[in-house]
Length: 396
Image 1 (tube, rainbow, N blue to C red):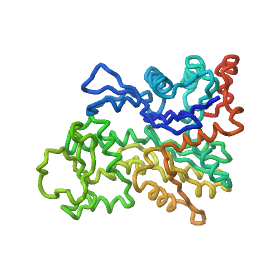
Image 2: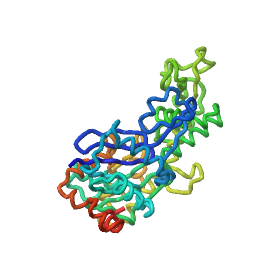
Image 3: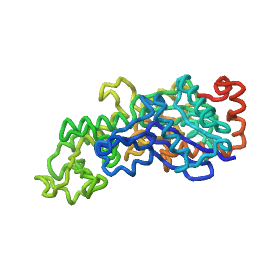
């Protein structure tokens, strides 16, 4: 019996058998400008010759799975003969879903897994619970941890104690990678080049040049300096998808601070947007979202916990999700939480080697756990008792 672990994110699906390696695959469909009629699914993205003006069709909206037709197509592709060749009758699936997921979505998910695909058994679980499982597995002396999962749609902050999530401490900030990319698109379109349709390219720009500032106002001052003194400024060469396949940052020594470039490359000159965009994770109020930033929400969440547990949470803060990969992210979270936390508590912020696949690794460990059989719902169970048995067993 094999177990397939699928961390079904709103941007990427992290998928693999528990005895193999993980693959990170776009969880969406694409249409390109050039071949309007053809729809590309998941990792067929690589077949698109010219990804400018790429149109994304996403199964998730605002963090919840609403477009089942697209999700089915992606799953058919993932489970099918080109990818994982799943033998459904002989496979368990561990699949993630967001916190407090709507029961209608949960029911549809059960129906698709058991009635359409007919998996042998299934376990639906939050990605953060898998991250916590992975963390406790490595640090088995620890009883508590608090997981910051900053993904595509939003950022969740969830305290775990002895492997159980503490519902009263769960916090959600409605800022994620999608919002950051969209904001960067707006800024660039307003300041220099109309890129509102270039989701794919600008997302790449964000990943290549953005960073989290350790001192926002100081960096703002540097960003206003002229010429070589401006250490924040970067020139980003946009891809033309014929000679330049992927955009890149010009090295400092090749930058032209005074005039135009002679070469025919298309250049984006980025200064304060490099750190002003990720700053939204720390101050959502910058763009009119009246919510706390990550450090404040962390402290708020920990303060909702029993007092004797609080020091344990402060010294086990775990960062997961794609946004944690911004350079300077971990240091900034540490710096701000340290400033807000009581002096006598020790603060420690852990950024795993691969924060995107961390929950998947937790799922892999869980599948090898002797208690795994107890946690899943089998197809017989489901056929006998319907959705009720899933509601009883899965803690969402």
